[in-house]
Image (cartoon, rainbow, N blue to C red; front, side):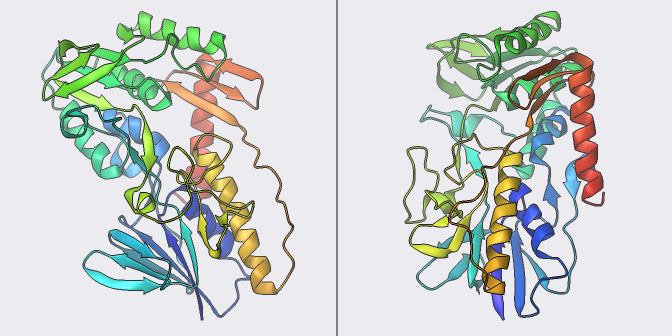
Length: 357
C-alpha cells in the first residue's frame, strides 16, 4: 500500500480529500488525514463565531467518508523527513510515502511584550471559542481593542458592533489608510462605515506593550477590558521547526509542483507555502487541485507538465456585519454595500452546500 498522509483538514486538506477520493483512486493507495478536530472548520468565518452572530455548528463541515480514508485525530509534534514519520503527542508515529503539510498559520506577535499572554485570538477554533466566551460575557459598556485592521480585524470589529451595540470598540491600524490592499474607494467606504457605527479607527498606531487590561499605543496606555490580536500571522510551529528552505516570512520554498526542491514526496499547501499571492482559502484550494493532479499522474505513470497553470483567484469579499460588505471581483470590479454582502453569503452557502452541510 502507498500511504498519503495529509496534515491538517483546512481548506487545502479538505479539497485534497475531495479530489483524491474519486473513482479512479488506485486500490493500493491509503489516505490518512490527521487533524486536531473531527471536522473541517471554516476559518474565514471565525470572526462571526467570536462575535456571537454564528454558532459553532455553522462554521463546521464534516470530513468525507471513504473505505480508503483513515481519519486520525491528535496533536502533531514534528515531522521526521529522514524516516518518513509524523510524530504525534501521546501516540505512535504515522509513516508516510507521500506527505502533504497543510497546518495553517498562527498569530505573530512581532515581539511585542505581553501580546501573547494578554490578548485573545481568532486563529484557531479553540482560540475563537475562548474569544467568543470572553466577548459575549462582557458587562454593558465595556471596551474592546482589536489590534490589526486587515480583513480579519475589520470583519471582527464590524460583526461585534452589530452583535454588541453597547461596546466601545477600537480598531488599531498601523497604516495611514485602512485596508490598503484594496482600491481607495473601498477603503473609504469601510472607514465611513466605522465612523457611522461608532467604531474608533486609530491609524498609524504602534503597539509597544500589552498588559492584562491595558494596551500601549506609542507608549501611551489605554485601558481595555478585552484585547483581540489580528495583527500578523506566521507558519505553524511544526513547519517553523522543519529543516527546509524558507522565505523571509518563514514560508516553505517549493518547486512549481508544490513539493520540496530536494524531496518530491513532501508537499506544502496553504498558509505555510511560499507563493506569489497572499495566503487565502482560494489559494490553498487551488494548490490542492494541482497537488492532487500531480499525485494522480504519478500513480498512473503519466508525465507531469514542467510548469502548471497559474492559480487564478476570483477575488476577495469582506463583510461589514450582516447587511453590508465590500470586495473585489477579479482584479478590477469593486463592489460595496448590500450586493457585496449578498455575494459573500452566496459564496458561503455554496461552499457549505457543496461539502454536504
